[in-house]
Length: 81
Image (tube, rainbow, N blue to C red; front, side):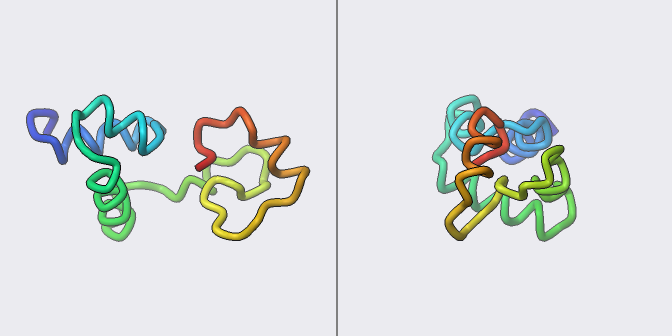
């Protein structure tokens, strides 16, 4: 599976890498990686990042504004977007 771009993207995302780092490592665009991320999540191939959050803050995929506490706590987390 590591021979094609899609497979490499899946491997890198499964390791918890960010969209930006996956795009750089796989020599592809962030748009492609985001599209694949959505696709893989819909297929159930990737767990939600919030399930990996040890803090319980849920800031990994937050779409609304975050509290000051969450921003501080999650500042160094590689899962924060």
